[in-house]
Amino acid sequence: GRALLDFTCGQIAMEFGAAVGLGSMIAAGASPCMVPARRLPACSLGGAPRRLRARHATAASRRSPGMRGAVADGISLDARVYSTSARTGLASGFGGALVASVACTGSFAAVVRRQRSGVRTKFKVALRSLLDDLQGVWEDDVGNEISISGSQAMFSDGSGAWPIEREDNSDDGLRLRGTLFIGTAEGPKWQFPNGLSRSWVRPSPVAPEDTEWKQIFQQYKGELLGIRRKLWASITTEEFSEAATLLDAWDQGAAMPLGSSLEQQARLAAGRGLATGVCFVHRVFQYRGVVVACEPWCTATAAWRQTMGAANLSRGETQPFHHCIVDDRDRPPGQTTFVSEENIVPTDEARVRSATAAGRREVQVGHQLGRTLTWLPR
Image 1: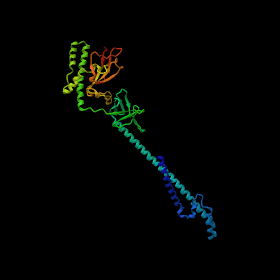
Image 2: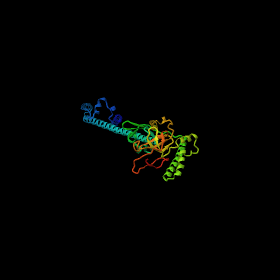
Image 3: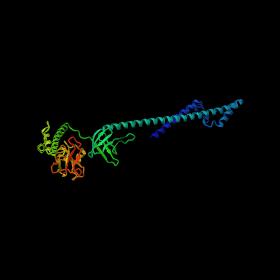
Image 4: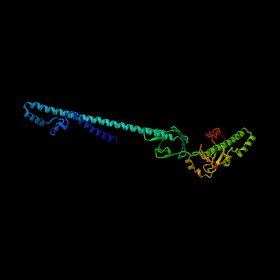
């Protein structure tokens, strides 16, 4: 397209230059409009034809023999002047065409450069705007939680932070973990080189009543955890009378938080035997494990809830869920699960065992209801 436009501009410039040349010829006094038709061949670059000069010389000699040589020389000179004027005019015409062509081509190239620069600037602005819209927390369709801060993306799969690269000099746009952004700000979608894609969605907003329930839930579980710690400490120091009192308090459950409704108290009482450090057996899969953190509802991503069928549970997705570590004897070492409250069966017969040299296992729990847990194998 650019070559075609350049050629067209060149053609226009040539015609304009020819007009300039014609003007130069007229200014030189050798305009074809002032020359009879029979003298037009004198416009050729070779000068006036011989027969033309001879004819004019003969006519002059008839009028005045003394003027024969002068007239002939004058006609010859006139032809030379006309020929020189023609050369100058045509040269001016081609020169004007060249200058006009260069000017037109340069102007067009400048316009193209400005347009490309403008498009590139708009593209960069669009990328920055898109990156601003992607800030915050997202969930993908395989259960990962992604937190975008600046040009960094933190994935919940433990892979750490990944840079979001902006392809300013191409039409690719944003790239992340080897994927190309092909979605929109409202519905992000990332495509791998093999064609596989991952879609992101915003997590469901937490309603005010959910926030209130979360605070009551965490307060109650904190009280339970405090009783369990005191019970563990009294048993370790062999203060059995205090341990018996604490055991009764544990069986009865912690005091209900002030301001909690009857419905909330009933939900808390259903899980009064579950707190960080409690060993259990899974009701369905029968593996052994230990609770390391508690959540007031299923906080997993929408993709995880759909895959695991959380909505099909008898108590649904709104029941408390617990982060658990699975016994190494029942599952591959280091496996963790996210289990609904209805599938956790607390039992004193289950003990988590780990084949360590010290005979014990320590776990750092990244949750406000958890601390460093230490338990001995049975």
